[in-house]
Amino acid sequence: MTTIHIQHIGEKVLVPQSELERLVELAQQYEEITVRRQEDDVPIWDIMRLVEQGGAFGFWEEEGEDIYSSKDGEPV
Image (tube, rainbow, N blue to C red; front, side, top):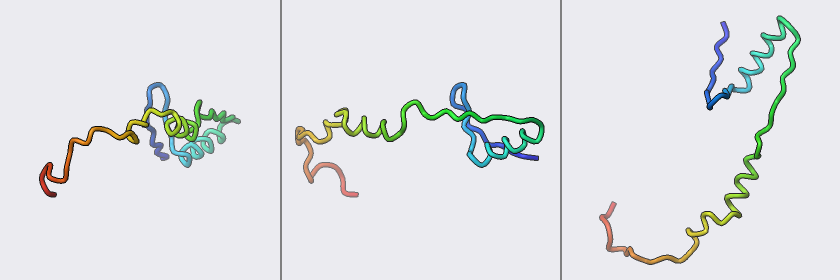
């Protein structure tokens, strides 16, 4: 018996690479199959670059109102 672990994401399913290869191997025992891979619409590096250069988190670098001092809060 072969166990396949999946993760549902909407109408799609994620399968570990090794288990996908096992599924293909099993399917090929019965008929010829073709696996068509679809790359992500937007590669992760492009998303990271957009976040980095887009300015959405620029407020972290701005000098803001200094409302806290070392006397605020409780010692940890």
